[in-house]
Length: 245
Image (cartoon, rainbow, N blue to C red; front, top):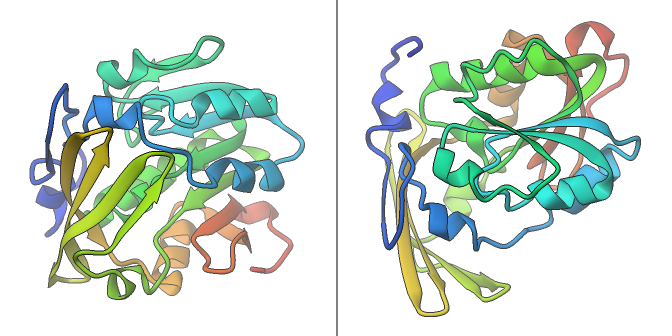
């Protein structure tokens, strides 16, 4: 299942959730993920890839964004390891059940997305394998869109911080540094009287460290797409002729 590192136990076995319904191996509630609101991701993809074409959505979950990506005009292939998540995908997309790091479709895509801060996994080895999967599936003239936590995200958040969107209230319940740049996080969700929690570990990944991980995968930053640098367009390193905007 991949190389072992000092943080490898954080990436799966230590993740868990509470609340009604089915949970995935990494502690995500399928029912919760059918209700999570879109948070501006579609606008970022829309601006970054106006040419449309084929899109590989890595870690699609219950299709929170999948139908909207298809609505933009992409031919979407959606990947998740959970059959329960994939069962909620809209019609008209190609569903693939697989872990991201083990994915080998033998084809390349105009756009590959790695969203939901997956790159901030607490396991550095898994981070590299996730980015390697992006690199082996992006076309030579394609792009990888990565969502990462801003450099100051963990220091800016505090337990008790809460925000609401589209009827969903999200609250930071616990945020504890455990060493090596890794944080243990517990987040609460409430929607129409139903509550869930999700507990997971994440690694603070500075801009420099993130760019180093990209380089190890054969990718390079083409542009930072948001002011806080949480959205990044990366391209195959051998073809990049631009700077990091």
